[in-house]
Image (cartoon, rainbow, N blue to C red):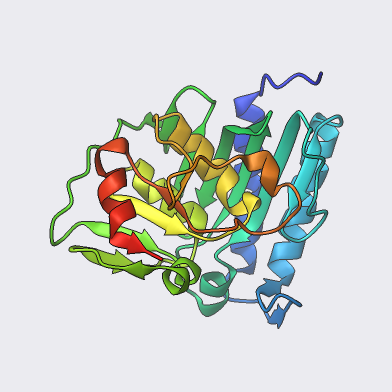
Amino acid sequence: MQNFDIDMTWLLNVGQQAGKLAHSYFGKVTANLKPDASWVTEADLAVEQFIREALRSARPDDDIIGEEGDTTAPPSAHCVWAIDPIDGTRAFYHGFPVWGVSIGLIVDGKPHSGVFVLPALGDLYHTDGQTAFLNGAPLPLPSPLIDSNAIFLVSEGAYQARSVDYPGKVLSLGSAAAHLCYVARGSAVGAMDQAGVWDYAAGAAILAALGISARYASGQAVNFSDLYDGRAVPEPTLFAPDSVYESLRKACRT
């Protein structure tokens, strides 16, 4: 069994260097459509290659899956790194600032630790598996209230899959990882997305450190090892503190 005690100084450095590399391409890239109709840029490819090389050098026994490289791992894998080199490629390409680099470690099917950096905004979220941090400061457990001004982050894919009857404001920022981190900092009451394991891994680990579970909108828990085949989740996920989860789930009808 591989060791999963992570040197967080090393991981933060990898995330920050990857973020600097990504930012060096910002506003200077072309985009191409992949077979699944999503976009990829030269930045996605360069950043993923950088991260993969850093992980292989330091953690040669771990599995790695990412949006632009090897996308599968055995369901029984012990330590799996799930990376999204540019989460929010469409926003990145169009010059919007809400995009980031996501590096998450999943241990025995559960999000363990990770880093998500938003270079254009100067924000760095991370967790060591025990505490969630924003720019080095511990994040408190959010205590959201649903009212007419409370923000519920819903991706376009999840919005198409579910009818949303929510009394507050619904926004999509274009990055699933950013959605999860804004829930972690208390800026949004919850986030509903329909994405892949590399979009979720770091953000789900950050939320897990705050006691916020990874659940589907149906109420079932997300088993991350089920996503090692590279496919998106079979139904929208709903990340929210327990205090508002049921209210949001009822607001998202099939």
